[in-house]
Image (cartoon, rainbow, N blue to C red; front, side, top):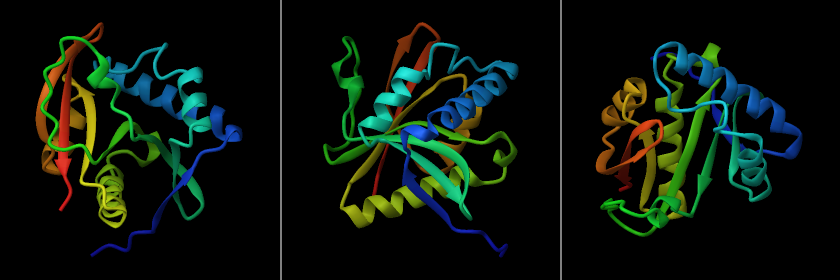
Amino acid sequence: MKNENILTFELAKIKNLNLILDMYTQCTERLQNIGINQWHKDYPNKNIVYANIKGHEQYLIKEDDNIIGTFCLSKEDEILNKPNKKIKWTNNNFIFLHRLCVKLEKQNLGYGKRIMNDLERYCRYSKINSIRLVYFNDNFITCKMYTHLHYQVVGEYYEKTGKIICVNKVIK
């Protein structure tokens, strides 16, 4: 068993805004370079991330006090408010994960799985029953990870960039 450093999550502050935007920009460019157009120059953007920070929803992922990634956690499900969406979420006591991003130099080293496992532990501790998220259908990297972590497809819808897959995991 390899020795893994502890990951911690902390709320982002306004002073972290540019760092977070840089991480999203680098990840967006990497995704586009391999043909995945999930994110683009207009998303995620400064206004969205700023609002998430102000709303206490944007988190930093740290390893040994070094920032290695970011994500947004929300109690709101804005997908439900969109017309023509047939999504069968499994329960109403949930958190919604948005825009999980790991720094390029930390990708493909198992951090995504570790982060999701830690989020599941947080949910158990906080008595939250499920994690919801969506991802771009062509993002084979994300699809593989969430399938491996036993997330269930509960629906889909279409955006300008293509088909979006909605997944949910009940936390036991």
